[in-house]
Amino acid sequence: MAEDNELKWISGFWRRIGAFFIDSIILGLVGFGLGLFLEDIFVEIGGWGRLVGFSIALIYFGIMNSRIANGQTFGKKMLKLRVVSADNKPISLVKSFGRYSIIGIPFFLNGVQLPIETTISFWLYGLSLIIFGGLFSIVYLYVFNRVTRQSLHDLVFSTFVVNVGIDNANIEKIWRPHLITVGLFFLAAALVPVYTSSLAQQEPFSDLIKAHGILLENPLVNNASITYGKSIVNTVKTGTTETTYVKAQIFLKKNQISNSELSHKIASALVKHYKQAIEKDVILINLIYGYDIGISSRWSTYSHRFNPSDMGVLDNDVAF
Image (cartoon, rainbow, N blue to C red; front, side, top):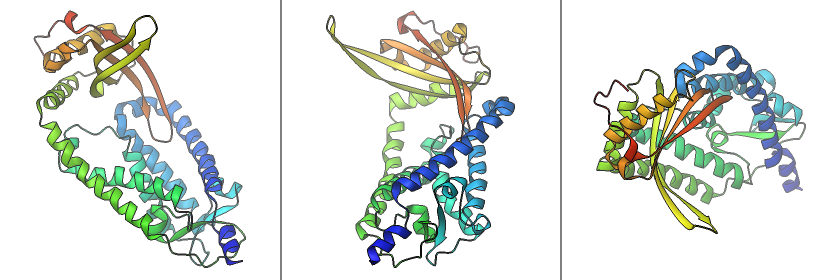
């Protein structure tokens, strides 16, 4: 009987996901409405626009999951759930804000376009712990912690998502291997920067970092990323063909995604400052215009393709 009470008091996985889905739609509509009036501002601030979405989500979940709204967001209210402490009472506003911060910060930081200097500095260790350690732990506990159904933010603040109108029951302690697994996630996240930092010192990557800085000098460029790799295509007529490429994702401040002259200049600058580009089969320049505020996004993309051997080298870096 005690097990039945526990199952009835603690919310099931899919009902909780359903409530979050409803809340996400509500926040998405808010973000869409803001984008209609503030698009230029969102484009200008680039990846940091996700902090706008985080602030809105923090206020929404922080207030609604607290005792002010009886621990219920609109999604939880529709599915008759609420956030409570172990005594089955709604939590304080401060605790609710802290609880959401643990789940919200890793999610919204995951999409922020950070300066490349940050990704090769000591700050990367903290970011890796928060983003990768936090996200993996949150998802893992959501799926596999079936006893208390507490994810990382619930464990830290001793909260539960429960069905409304059901008396609280004695909850078993979380399975110890879950806590060990979470610890391993954070340990792995702490070790990742050790590998990436040493990798960044090698010639191909140091050249990429230099080329990235040059691309950002263009006044039209808001942010950029450069990657390289190869694609393999299998067809009946030609068999297996392999194409190597270097790709630049260019986020623009103005909607000039079809500007072929701009893309050609970017490709030329890439060939000049990233020596390995000339050895690739193709250079892909994706010009992108839009914004992402975490709760809503809007993007337009145009892909330009160049043969590295056809690219002229620019004499003046800033001129491009």
